[in-house]
Image (tube, rainbow over all chains, first blue to last red):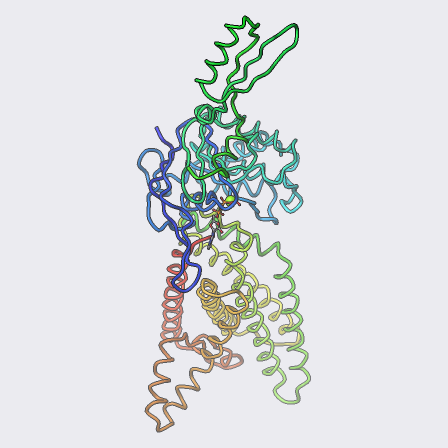
Amino acid sequence: MNVLQVQSLNKSFSTGFRTSVQVLNNVSFEVKEGVVTGFLGANGAGKTTTLKCIFDLIRPTSGEVLFFGNQAFDLNVRKKIGFLPERPYFYEYLTGFEFLKFYGDLIDEMTKSELVSRIMEVLEKVDLIEAKDRALRDYSKGMLQRIGIAQTILGRPKLIVLDEPMAGLDPDGRAKLSQLIREVASEGTSVFFSSHLLHDVESLCKELVILKKGQIVYTGSLDSFLSRMDSGFEVVTENDGRRAVQEIKTQAELQEVLKTIVDKRQTLIEVKRLRPNLEEAFVRISFGEEE
Amino acid sequence: MKAAIVIAKNTFRELIRDRILYLILVFAVLLVFLSVVLGQLSYAEQMRITLDLGLAGVELSVLILSIFIGGTLVFRELEKRTVLTLLTRPLTRGQFLFGKFLGLFSIIFTGLICLGLVLLLVLCGIGWKYQYQFPLILLGFLYQGAVLISITMVFGNIVRPVLSIALTIGVFLIGRSMDSLLYFAEKSQSVVFEKFAWTVQYLFPNFERFNWKGFAGQESFLSIGDLFLSSFYFLIWITILQSAANLLFRRKEFV
Ligand SMILES: Nc1ncnc2c1ncn2[C@@H]1O[C@H](COP(=O)(O)OP(=O)(O)OP(=O)(O)O)[C@@H](O)[C@H]1O
Ligand SMILES: [Mg+2]
């Protein structure tokens, strides 16, 4: 099942009298249940705009967004999703606990004592138990990002959507957040998040949605994205105790080279298929020549 | 409705923890004391003048609270982008807006009670005898405050806070001069002026209808019927203004 289905989303912003700029162009993709999906795109590609359209914060010019099969973004769906916007900022006058209590009251599905124990559980998970009675104005960036995640998972949602959750965090903070996302996903919550930190995306995501200048350029699994982006082969041979490495682009070339090796009776050590990492593949698709 | 109350509670807490509120309240208490002192300095009708000035002080404070906090009420959530997460929670935009209104309304109500008590204590301290009109006059202040909050909420959807506050003050001044305007229109021979005044009367809330300070120190008060009529007038304006704010807010995009 799809937890989220985005169909032919178009969005133009008017930029003045009778002029407008099209930011999203026929954007369609799905987020599958139970997996972590990464949302990639260069600065200004339209990721944040897409996410805001999904949650009705921005009205798309046309297109449709469906949750959990066929539901619109109504009050029931809202209870089953969580959203963390870009550079979130929460009520500085509330303590961590009060903030979660406030959001929990809005979900309104637990008794008071159930809610309190759920809040403690979530605070434990995001490692903020000690800071729960401190005002949010005294939280560090990493702590704010974690209380932001806590807010999204409070109601045991089926889907959480995070807009650049790792931005501005130090490596340790990022590692903690990655671990947290992994845990949340392992409990069956689908996660959809945008990020520029491809290393983290590569280690977390199973699926990818890639946006370029407002258009989808790839949707599908991370694996097939990387293998689609094959960069050829590496052949290692040995001659008189000395190793030689050859990089080969195509299958035909590879067969030629292998034939030579066999003919000349050289020692074949290894034939390796080269795969770009996500970083290279992404740069190629996002900044390379138009397809 | 539950969701609106959750928002209202949080708004109340937000304002209670805000220094601005205390700044205005301290100013208000000083204003009340000052009015009383000024009243005491007058030669004739000391008690009446003290009472009038004291009430005017409380009224001015309520107006300031309503206009200035109302002017930034929703804007704060937009500016700090807290609205982005909040509006994806299980509540409608209408409930959010109404909750904000209820929250500030409770603040005004609480502030009014406090200032009213301060004034009452001071007045009783100088030998004033309590009259039943006193709380009813304060009720009129509350009505004015609530209408003003609603006006700032309508303007707040269209313009920035500073302008919203300025426009609201403008509407208030028109509303408070409406009776004189209608009076002069009637006296004048000009048909155009009369038509103009007639139109203004329906376009803007008539704040004079909630201004009952004149009854302070009198033997009488508005008749029950008139009190009900004014309350009804109040409810109609609140409904119109809140609906307008709601309509505008529902169409908003949060880019
Ligand atoms: N209100 C607006 N009016 C005009 N153009 C806008 C408006 N909001 C966004 N845009 C444009 O839409 C494009 C997409 O912006 P968006 O914020 O969605 O990008 P993004 O993929 O989230 O980028 P980033 O990675 O920097 O966060 C940008 O080119 C931006 O300039
Ligand atoms: Mg963005």
